[in-house]
Image (tube, rainbow, N blue to C red; front, side):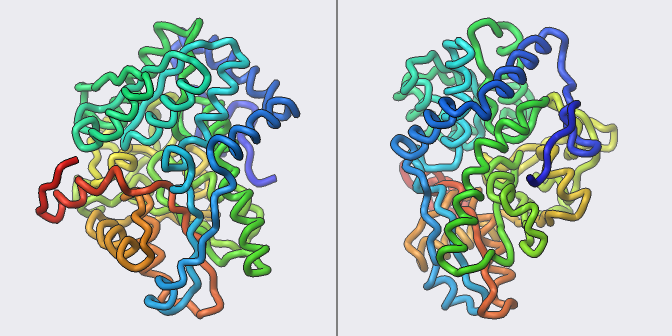
Length: 399
């Protein structure tokens, strides 16, 4: 089924385990535990109950009829991950990893977060399972996502502002790895995207694959056939790989990842890794990364705190390499316009991350025949982004 990492945790030339010796035992323990539980009927029954009764799955596949009519061209469907408990796709992976951590006897969860949705989801799961929780978040992101910081603290988590580097997502990841190294006995690092050393890209992908498993069945029921294209925003790439996975073997379904171009791929203020990155090693994996002329990881920028990561998960790099998926850059302005348009036309306020994918759907749908179908993953809701988008438009409002 679809694509799997090889025995060394590689997707083609991408992936692997580039980690310090002090973490190897923790990685081996995690890999062995996941192999033991991933096909265990009791584990999967418990996870299904959590998905359905706690996280509000299955999420709806919604026909965006007004948007379709207004734009002309292809039918547009939204996979509504914004309707999940905690407001984003992040809960899918977190519930799976938290359940796995509990089976492993861990009592403490740590996590990184950018936009705060993964941090909120991890804090939520920790509260549910009665576990300690520490979330690392770039200081810049704590300021632009203050509401989610408050939510994490309300849920009992300790939020650690990271001031190193650019004080954004990549620096939060680095700090979380350092913390895990110092305390592996009782701690599980609940990594939030399809990145890092093997087996994290596979684990996160498998828990997020519920998105495409559901959407594939839903579109067949609603339209009697598969979509022509599936679109999702891409930072590290968890919602996108989850949206793509069960369509990978369907060669007629185009897979389109929408990256954060920031102020443009012809500037230094971008986070579009596929468009501007090169092969490198960072955060435990070999993949594509935005780098400077000396091969150092470059500072990146996006209006979206959840997409301003300087790399991309190894499975996405591989899908791009073999031509199975296409990755396109979407600028801040295009994403903001999609955020505003979707809110006004469909009455749905999407996360600014998701708005990157909606923006590309708005671009391509009018040129397609009316019997064509696009499925766009709305990875999260945009409550958290309203103050930031208002500021972008020159309006100051209270958080």
